[in-house]
Length: 339
Image (cartoon, helix red, strand yellow):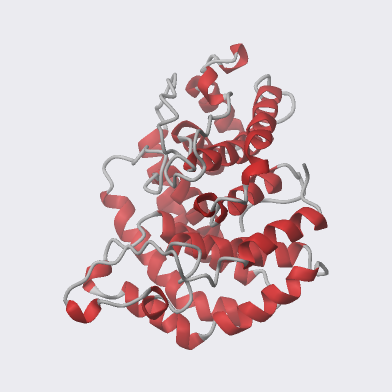
């Protein structure tokens, strides 16, 4: 499958169906008193849909990206109209005020932070600049939080869920490279500190509710922070048996036993995010690298396993289309997932 107007329209319609759907909703809301009791749209006037805050944020990233790539598709008109009503200075000021609460110090760290930066980066590439302007202050607040957080993170979080350090840094780095040179330098330095000497990855994954590959997200981050000449030997040492199809677990799609279970359904996201990582890594290695065809074939297997399951169960439907788009963007040499 390739990203064409028909596929883009399908993904956009899926996501338009939930970015303004308030319930069901899983709040991550620390309350300081009874006065803090409120519903999703009151707490988050922009990002109240899509079951949770971060899914709504990355759903909007997906919508804006599709509208930019396919401005003539029917859904693009609806996306632009909804964005005009949503990304206003007043509403984004309330989102920022939520972050500034003492109780919100760890809110959405680091996954939601990273997606907000990705959304702002995409908004900066839109013909309508008012959306990026409205998001600017919140993006700057989150960048400041990354700048304070990463130096004190003695050890990276390697879990395959929302707390994964590598994934967040991949997204944050793409924003920082055009918006914050000091954050760019910090991410590059910290990636080397955490992962520069990693060798012979055993890839003890997947866990039962992973949607990210710890091993491949790490490799993807290193591919973005090292030169191509430096990345290739690092990768060869990190996965030295890849040309012998080991570790096999990284090459075989995860089995999803129950797509109605919100945690088990994460595994469809793992398949899609692995496809994105494998394709991106193969591109960085280059066609002549012996691991490149293995990576490309693995990506296709993972994509085939989960692309048919983007809709039908809301536990996957509220977020999987974003990761499908990541994988499809990575398959096109003329496009990049971020910004």
